[in-house]
Image 1 (spheres, rainbow, N blue to C red):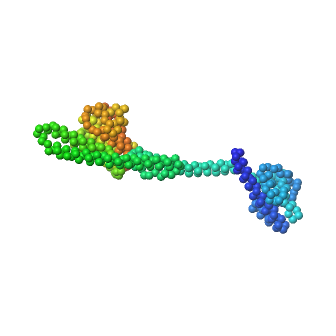
Image 2 (image 1 turned 45 degrees about the vertical axis):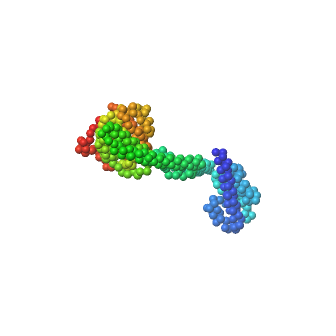
Image 3 (image 1 turned 135 degrees about the horizontal axis):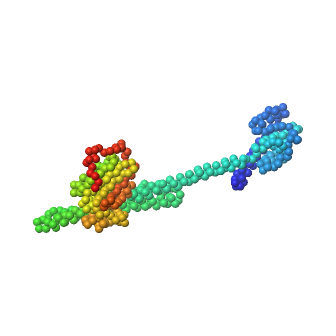
Length: 431
């Protein structure tokens, strides 16, 4: 408060006193210059326009004015403008302050309300605090905007890098620290993109170099005489087929799946199609739909690869038992669950099975084969598309592989409360 008074209110009072002294002396000069017959009109004008009252000198109606701080500033300013001190007196019974001014051989008293001097402390303080708060708010908003906008761009870029995508170049502006961070993220993104491209080129080269001799071996095996060692020829064929499948999985893992264009897909049709493919290979699949038809906005290739890997994994490790596929599609939940009846996965090993080449053969049964890339591919694709993948224990034994999809990508269709009776009858109950 002291700072407000010293640095704001006192300078304002001095400035007000200075301006009012100049205005007051202009009125006094007008009284001196105009003839007395024009004084009545001048007095009325001064009263109406400036609030100044002019009357003859009446010494018995006033007392000496006590010097308040604001009156003292006015006295000093009046003396400077007039070239000498002018008598200043106060009304004994009112708020008026009078100044004796000589004109045409007599003295006139020009009065004004003492409220015109100085400032209102309450209003001045409120105005200062309000103006200061408004200025601080505006400056703060500008500074926050200067910091938050680059941070939002950085956050978006980091999330895209975390999903395996290549973000656009981040503007290197804002405060020095944020600009340096943006440059670092741009370099990191470029390096990751270059490494991914090198990996793809390398895997493509390895695939080409390996498949060429494998093709020659396959041709040679076909030309062998199976009459002597048919079991050996069949074993070689199985090994060649396994090697080709392994190479295909390597290529699939190295592909960049983040560049495909999302389109409208029917999740139920995808589930039915993949289930039919596996059933032709001897697996038993029981698909179940718990909601009306679900049209979703997604990359169909990536979605089919994820579901295909989950279904093949369940068929491979499900001990030959039926596999239940549950489709949930509502405003609050969109997910596909692949449920097997295998031995299950220990809770402490769930995260490790998503690592490339990690296999828990002892935990998932005695069946051999596989490269350990199936779930790694699933996790990579799910991360790139903002999907979630969880492996949960199934009641009664087995594992539930749950693929969660964002509900924001679900198309709002006309609600259907119940499935047609025929469809309900043909839908098998969960095992």
